[in-house]
Length: 248
Image (cartoon, rainbow, N blue to C red; front, side, top):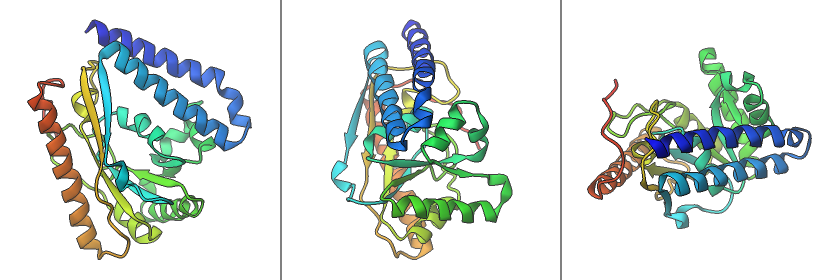
């Protein structure tokens, strides 16, 4: 509890300082702002390791081809939204459109040229998402999407949305599934943080051109089986917090 209190305080103070001190980056090149975003993530990961005792292990880097990629990652924690950023050269995160209206957070997200989706707008929003993602891919960026759209606890049933299918079909680039176990150490909607090792694993890429149903089946199978194995491995070491109640 004490380590969680100290870390959470350090995390939010650090984030506020990065936003305030980094405000001039809003008026500079996007590459400078992206460097600041990565520096924030690395700083917070260092604080998490030093205060809480949470290490990070990255597996399967060889599964990341050169060039633009579609990254489809399991989403268990707020940790995923910043900790994955430094793993790529120029990532573009798929985000809810409502977030762009938040002062500073939204301003910086627009500066980073993240991809916003107004889910309430229906099919037209998804078409715009694909168009924006195609521009990012043409620029050689890595497009990161959480296919379930929201955080789900490690023991929740999966709930994949159609956005990742549209991106896969519309971008014609490899899709790399990502398994992780971050929800054991930074649980969603919880104050506690836990020591141990968060593992992020890049799985075998799915090449473009697969039929939609085949891609969907292979993607979900890879992510879910990979994530379940990482969760079981961590629990076998006695790491992470208590199981969370399953949600529908």
